[in-house]
Length: 340
Image (cartoon, rainbow, N blue to C red; front, side, top):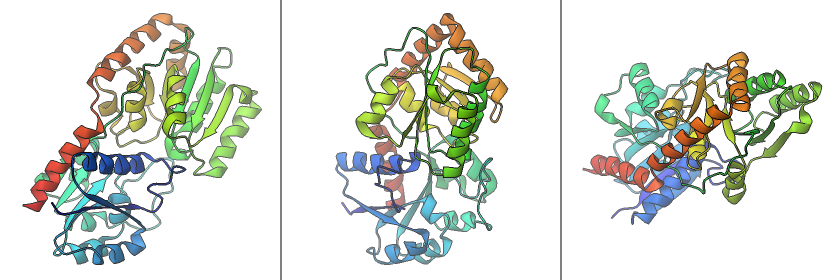
């Protein structure tokens, strides 16, 4: 069997940059190897993608992360007749994101994806967005959602006061919305742990300044980026995961929480509903609405019946989650169809 080449962004394997896309790439590569597929992982920038593709043997199957490939259409079109190209889209780069400055110029993502024999989307939402935004044949778009590892069930505290958020500290993740909600809940008992790299230091400073000004900084822990056992421990210690993002294409944080039986309160955006499943093992609120989020959190913190019901749903959802072996099997089927 020929070597599968996976091309991801620079920093793909850096534990200090554990983005959902990076985790997906690393985990699916390992899962494919466990299935007996030889995988060679390359890290590069969009500017150097052409050099990487030029150096690969003709006829190779190459999975290119969209964070690299979608902004380098010339490299993909130059290689489309020589290589079997598959673009893996975690987040469409042409999508305007609330809370983000967006690209400085138009991103010719449609041309990049047109050069691929197949486009793998990590959620139904992403597939539908790409289908509506670009003139791509429907049979070229495939959905391969992330897997997750079932952890030990979190015990949960009686009061449910331990809140956790996981995600890079950047406006798109909406932590400022949660901070605004928490400042209106000062009369209740709660603690909040924020796990994530400070991608936007100014934004992180503003969050802390708001908390300090409200006299709430002693209830908050900024834990930085965590991976492995340290991240598992953070989930195990949580009563509720709060995902206040302004956008999520899937919401791997939600599935990671549910894999431990921890309910999730989240913004109703992108593919988050897919990650949560039904019946909802948590609550969904409109994005960018501190009042709605505060009301949801108040119900959780003050009503033991709400906590019991949602914890039970989270445990049920845990039982239906698939592992990364399923993700790898589905991706392998896409790759096989490309190789025919």
